[in-house]
Image (cartoon, rainbow over all chains, first blue to last red):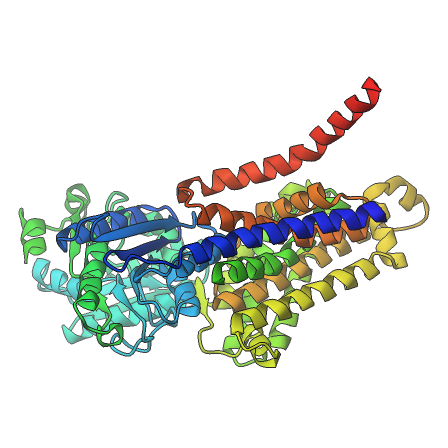
Length: 330
Length: 295
């Protein structure tokens, strides 16, 4: 019994000591050099998206003309995909008292929205900030939060389709009614398509095992192009859909860059490096005097087009030689 | 201060996960990876119900019930179909991923403006600072759960469950159905883990289908660190150890971050903490033994 109490006391002492370290180090951080901007970038996991955006942030900061270490310091933290670590990282950054915090990906943004109320936060690589619950519209957002949305470029996709094959009447997609994102994306594509007089045929799926059948059902309806929207279910089974489309000589267009290698004829994807650069541009506007609440959320300013020539040939669609370059330059 | 309060709060919320892992790992010696699915299950159920307008207390209780069902299913797969425990857990965890997607209807569900247990905790407490108030309420809640668990393991049923882990032949000879005891125990463990997930979702303001990743290891780490410091003499000490282990573990992570460690090394360092906690009791025991021999 006595040793038990002693051990509990020991553990309590350890907790007290660790707490004391944290309190002591917090207060020693209190003095702040006001000439140097203190920036922090918080990422949720290690993925090509987070790495590309990190490069973008670096490029963007170079573009502002500020010098690292002299004009600003940037503290980059990554939770390595662990949500409990992400919680502690955000608390750590807040207690550092930075001038501005960059965040990438949806969970990081949501935690920041929950925990940070008085430090400006600029997000990037978040597809749909409204669905994440941090804004009502691009202009009506939490007062200290704005950023860059990387939602698929549905408008751009329809424009490309019209340029490449002007006599397109119908396009098709598979969607998953169980996913709010999927329904939303499908409706966005439908809206832009109908504005241009194109009809969208959509086939619902509820599980990944239904995707092969759904793809067959969709090609049965003979759309001119399959334009596959992004959601969890179809993203993971995209190879299946691409194969069915290919067997039936219907070109498949997508929105995720790695689908190009998997055999999509054309992919319209957001440029994640640009997403980082654009976020820094918003930060610059804030440092130049515009309050965060007056800076609207924006879409990424650049979209990339990837063309798989071999797949295009197989589907019998002719893509002008320098279409890719011309489109990107415009 | 905010880092300290944040680390303590997360440590206490995840101590419920540690208590669940204590039941499966220390009582049944069963490294139950169902935890990674059931913590998300708890979060998804609570978030979906709160968004649909249910009050957060009932939503959290239903989330717990969901975790109980998941745990008993793992138990049934393990005991009735004689499938290896780790495999049974993996099967359940894999299935729960889809279940969680269906419950939320998408991969991520925000709880930004809804009333949650956390906002309730801020309201009922006398402490003006909201974060401190939440911390105090969670501390009291975890203490209550710890005491309830201790009392439960002293009842006949609780004793039979412990005996099932210690000496299944003996307890079977006394007419206890060990399969049922394991299934019940895993149900309880995952109910606690789902409770942890439900509270975590309300604390951080969202549930995400990926949020369970890595959780089993953190839960085990807390149990092991607690046992290394407090000792595993009795159920009571193991329960206190699991709770304190979880808090100490989060504080260690916070201190490591505060000291400016390269964040890419974070997982390496946490693995090192757990390794030290595993080895420390063994080394000290060996040194004590040697001391006796010399005498």
